[in-house]
Amino acid sequence: MVVLSGAGISAESGLSTFRDHDGLWEGYRVEDVATPEAWQRDPKLVLQFYNERRQAGMNAQPNAGHKVLSELQKHFDVQIITQNVDNLHEQAGSKKVLHLHGQMFKSRSTRNPNLVYDMAGWELNIGDCCELGSQLRPHIVWFGEAVSMIEPAVELSAEADIFVVVGTSLAVYPAASLVYYVASKVPVFVVDPKVPEVQTRPNWEFIVEKATIGLEILKQRLLAKHV
Image 1 (cartoon, rainbow, N blue to C red):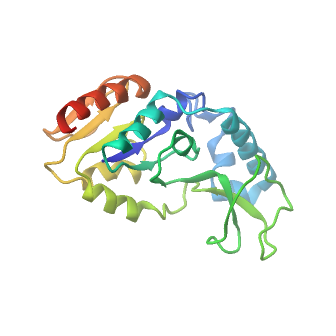
Image 2: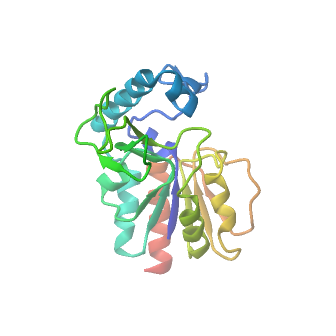
């Protein structure tokens, strides 16, 4: 089972989605805090923004949706591909989590992107350096940067026997393209309060509920059929 998760599942744990209806993310223009140009222009502001996100993330707890995905590991080989940068899937107990857009509680070198470090707390500031002496930055894929983990995500999607989409509108690329790498006969379940406006296949099924409710419905259905 391969699961593509998006901001909707984290929103139920109190974490804001990256862009609200007014185009802002927690009061900031995305262009000012989540692009390479923003980092070059005002790295202090970018660091402040992600420090605030980490503080919020440290107080967030996995919700029932995260826990259902963890419970399904007892019966299925569950691989989660997430667009989210929080660690709520891991907190809930999911063992196989691929982060497409980076991880909030990691930092990386601005000189060598392969130097990635776990963060003990929430704060990353100007003057915090990697072992090479260069400034550390958030380990986040910003708008305009390549999504380096898309290839392994494509491979996982192509190997899926069951594919689940939860908490995403399938509007953010390249993540949204993953569902089209799924084999044509594989069942695809989309769990979201709104049916995404995308091209579908006959074997797609929509559970029009938020993640906490919809994933429980899906779990019961899958267990009745496969276990």
